[in-house]
Amino acid sequence: MNLARIKNCLEINKIWFETIAAVLISSMAIIVSIAQWSVMEKQALIAERQYQSEIDPVISIGVENLGMGENGVYKLKISNIGALDICNVQIYEFYLTCPCERRGQDLSCDSKSFAFSSVPNSPIKTVLLIRPDDEVPYSIDIKKYIANTQRGEEYPCFLRLRIDYQKKVDGKKYRKLKAYGISNILMDLESDAIKVTSSNLPHFEKVRDLLLNNF
Image (cartoon, rainbow, N blue to C red; front, side):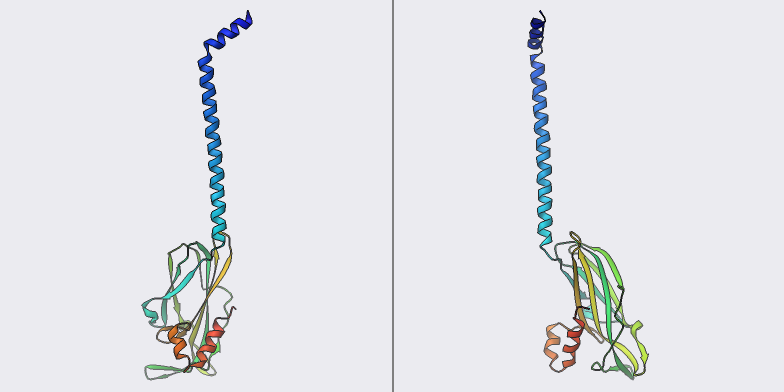
């Protein structure tokens, strides 16, 4: 009797059991699809990180107003021209000073007789993050480096910028060095124009090699 009742109940409610089974199967398929999507997303993220780990970030240092200074202040810009975010960007300034004397309104400096300023232990400026295609304005002011010495008044005549930075994706460290001669303009010591004229200014090559050493 009980078996007959059970059989009858199953036949009456057959459609409900089939519906519930279909819903359960559909739910399982959705769960499996979500799991597969999650795995694919993680695999894509891992692949992207591996791809980025093989790429070096790139920054450039440019000058504003053709590098012309005003009252000892020169404006530059630091640009992220690569494809990756860079972080913890630290900027250091290092100068070579030269003996100078005033002749009327002009300043005459002996760039062949340069002296070292102190090597900085801490950055002049720190930028936490620079995204691709972003640029950061940066100014240098040489007035604070003018000094009176036993050789007389000395002015900064050469500048070395050192920029230490990291690739955000993995923290890998990088360094950018740039050397300039200082007059009424900033002269890029690695430019083709300087390389052509350095035959008449051989000490420029010596200074350039010195400033581009990795210290």
